Amino acid sequence: MIDHTGIVASDFEKSKAFYSNALAAIGYSILVELPGSATGHGDVAGFGEPPNPDFWVSQGTPNNPPVHVAFRVGSRARVDAFFKAAIAAGGRDNGKPGLRPHYHANYYGAFVLDPDGHNIEAVCHAAE
Image (cartoon, rainbow, N blue to C red; front, top):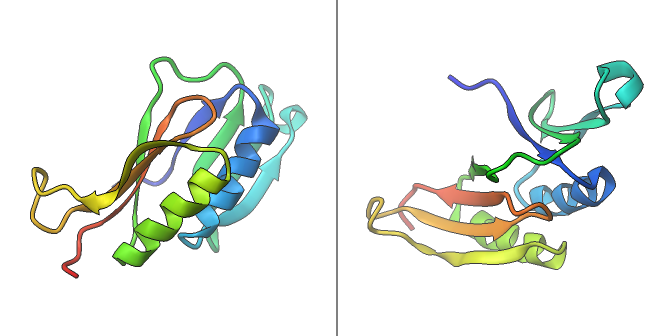
């Protein structure tokens, strides 16, 4: 079982704002922020649902190649809301909300590229 994951961002404040807005649509918020003086390498923000963050954004040289992170959500409406919020926050369309039956019959996902080109997805596996 995965406890947490994250990405490294070239512009920490820009990415923090992007994720704050995009992930709010799926119930995530910033739960922890630590300055570089505390981490020894760069500022970090931990996002999640209370009480524990499970997605971290760190300041530094972005992962290369960019990474793919998928957030599982409970409804297709949340996938749609994520996509809309992420695009409004400056994300780039990398796959509009919709069924992806080549994965399985009820795979409903949406993909956006964050400010550093990381492929961020919201996915619902439930039937409509």
